[in-house]
Length: 415
Image (cartoon, rainbow, N blue to C red; front, side, top):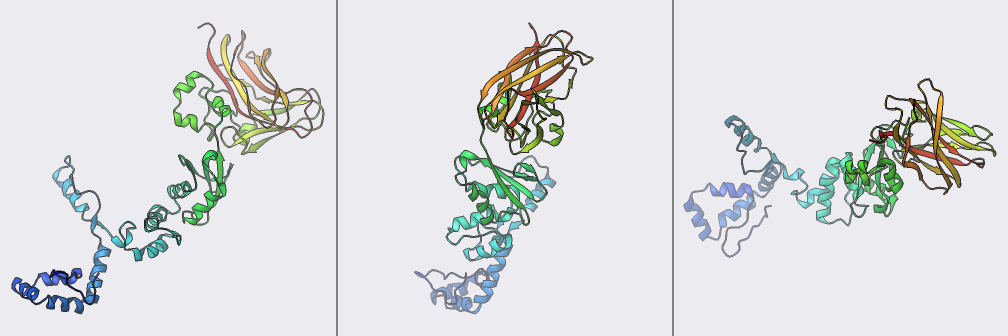
């Protein structure tokens, strides 16, 4: 920038504005030599006289910019002459320095922040201020900007996903956004949303929600029941098991992950050993995979409770084959459980029933019933009904969450 009274250093030419230097360079060389011998008197006068003009000229240069878009070298070697000319012409488009947070003068940063809706903390360093404007401000409201802002509140790998149209674990509106992070990487959950707002990345009018997840062996086992499933999966898919619902290939279980009311409707609540029919509802946010689970709630103090699937009618249900089946359950009290397969013929008549029984399931914990257990279908098998049963006497008000149902053809017996 120009000073009203430029000075010389060791006889060198005084530092001037671009305007003054450009005008001075047009003088005949003899004039410039004489001016140097007289201590740059004319150039000093010219700088003082055109100080404001120089500032205006410098401002024009800043607005016009000096950094072309794209690299200068190497030039693309595979373009025809016309395309190469267009490529060179495109490089003449230059970025304005005043609108570039990486190169704008320091005094312009507050204006840039205001322009893009970014917030500059009072104690932020120059590098941090430039990063806030360039990182969050210019993309304010985008999923990338929200994720970048949230990462500063996380540790380790700083995993974060932004999910539109979701309110926590429930389906939301166009104004709802859920930020999902790993529980092990989130020291202070409240700080995640606070950081997004503080850095100006929150879209106007949006409602922000935050959820955490942690992969467990139950979730992994539910999605990858065999070694073949493990071999086919990527590490990223295994690590994020249970975050979003991904059905097991060839799974025939109706409403397998209980994500929606339509999934719940594919199973019917029933009593076990007398008593009242339990309630059967969708439990949002309770799923071992995806965003929900099915929930049985005991009504009355006698008998047990169960759910039964609709009849599975599928061309893959064949006699004398091996089938893999299982389901994840989480009781609110200690229970004994069993999962059964009722094999039926093509007319719907029952042929036989096979089951898996587990006693003393821990309250509040997910347990996988079956999963790696294989059952052979009887002769004439053509249809199947699945049941999940809480046996004995279940106390009134007790709940049973169920999720990740599996029923899949494995192989032909003996080959």
